Picture 1 (tube, rainbow, N blue to C red):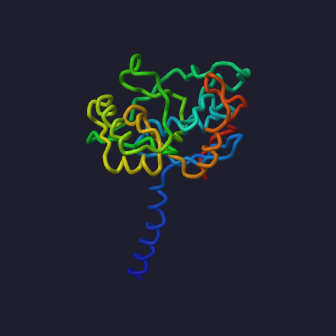
Picture 2 (picture 1 turned 180 degrees about the vertical axis):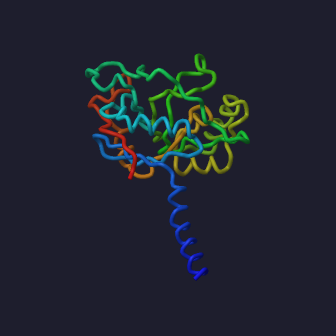
Picture 3 (picture 1 turned 120 degrees about the horizontal axis):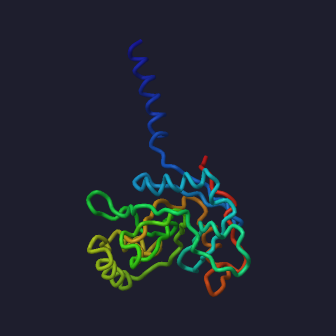
Length: 229
């Protein structure tokens, strides 16, 4: 009987433990299709802030107000909800910023800007030397692939920009050669999640026609963001 009880307990734990270890996911419904995003546990400040805003319906009906082909799509400006056609966007905020979560306790880069990376926008180093993130504006990387020589040059710049904290390792070089992304942002903007499903939607959005300010000519809108499942 004791053996049976032990077996049942172990079976229960085997079911519970994977569930407890699952990362949070959100489904971003857009006018171009759905994007499923997985949020990282080692960037809890950004994860929890994004989840809170999503649950408060903050992102409902906001635009992707900045789209650059072969680079990224950006949204989260609260001023974009009722913006007139042609209006310049990008300055809307929620009144606070988030402490950067760029490196682990050993000083290693937490997450690279690979294709599909979810990260928070921020103001530039000249006014934001701590590289604190916007409280609401985010972007999703599409990027491009790079040659070895290009990555060597980017690596040298990153070394200077991050005070020797980001190194273009063989693993990162392989990633950016084969999958692509935006390596020049590594260690400077917090990546806190990634696209799990919907890269085809991301690809479609980053290809839309834009005006001189990178705003899509035809609005691309976030319908809502919700926890998934």
